[in-house]
Image (cartoon, rainbow, N blue to C red):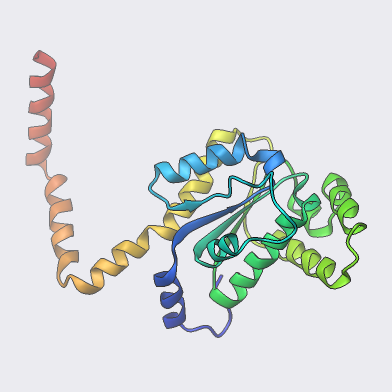
Length: 228
């Protein structure tokens, strides 16, 4: 999801400056105490440094400086798009900032469509569209409305995850696995650049652990443990 024409050095620089692995964007009233809470716990359990705003139900008109910095200093933004996401001007402004970070900082965005279809977000239709219509009718700033609409259209076109009729636990594990694959290799890449010859040593250890001799030892230990 890199920006066209961006150099690998600029991407490496962005990753180096990242304070968080993941920024979670969600509509608090929809998912905070259930799906998003479980997703956050699963991410943290895997050692993924995740930012979550626990004050989403009590906020003013503008995004705070701290929240803005959290978005900008996250490597990935996971956007949980739920039925009433578009009814919150805060969520929409948050999403617009995330889209900007994708363009300027090569930030990865993983949309999660929770109980809605991507087409509903892309075209602002059905119940998602109703929530959007109620909000935009209250906003007099047409420029801001178009900015939010563009952000919704763009995020809906990205490859993401759709819950559908699947089990929530398995769905969360799928999201976490994708995030893990993106954020964890950075540590391995960083080490490989500074520790010369480590790859061959790791391979030697891997081969040794899979050798017949080590396997025989495992079997013997299992027998001894069973006796005791």
